[in-house]
Image (cartoon, rainbow, N blue to C red):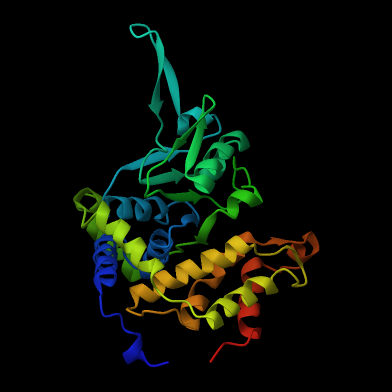
Amino acid sequence: MTQINSVISDVAGKDIYEKIYHNIQRVMQGQSTAIRNLLAGFASGGHVLLEDYPGTGKTTLAKALAYSIDAKFKRIQFTPDLLPSDITGISIFDQQESSFNFHPGPIFANIVLVDEINRASPRTQSALLEAMAESQVSVDGQIKKLEDLFFVIATQNPVGSHGTYPLPEAQMDRFALQFSLGYVSPADEVQILASQMQSHPLDHIKPCISLSEAIALKQQVEQVRVSDTMKQYLVDLVNATRTFEGVQLGGSPRGSLALMKVAQALALFDGYEFVTPEHIQELAVSVIAHRLVMQPQARFSGQTAAGVVQEILRNIRVPA
């Protein structure tokens, strides 16, 4: 496997990625890994869940991506009293026409930011689940398709925070990635203060790619080759979670598919025409860990889903 042969001759996809990456980096100080992870989820066609404590930049990161693309963007603030119709839309009776007219909800957009997703009730969560799972919503007995480019970025406070509802396993499984931003270094935090003395950097960010370029990026990701050996490797990683001691519910086949697609995105970002073991390993924890359900005794003993995936990565033989 030589780097010379692995470099993509048509670097349009890599160029698109770099334009978005640098545009977001102007807003997000010290979060290069989070930006790369978010773009991997976006380019692979999955949805992303950002979990961290308030004030770490989750919403800012999501908005920076949305503002970097000339596409339709909507934001939904999830609250305990939010109704499914607040997401999907509602039919209103028009007296002049004597008929009901459908008014689309914020879910009918290309990029949807769902802020504090775990503060809404399970009933409202179910409306979002259909949209994420099937790119459609059911309203008044009718199926309404969503946009061709449909990407959900959800943020949540850590489970157990005041006023939160745990997301069901089926909904967690619909997120291609879950990761945290964490706190930036003191030097980067000083830069954040300096950049917001007069205004917020988001006020000045402009679209750097078009909707058609975003779709082209996703299409190029699909063209990145995944050898049978790499497919077997990533399946071995996910399959190992199903028999791991302390794990009640292991990773699903959907998890294997998500891991393959984000690995393809990373390969494209790096200028490769095929996936390497390093691309699979880079986001294995972020793709697999949130899909696992730990047994109660394992949780009490301090075992974590992320730790399980990390141990599996160490134990599974890496293909040559």
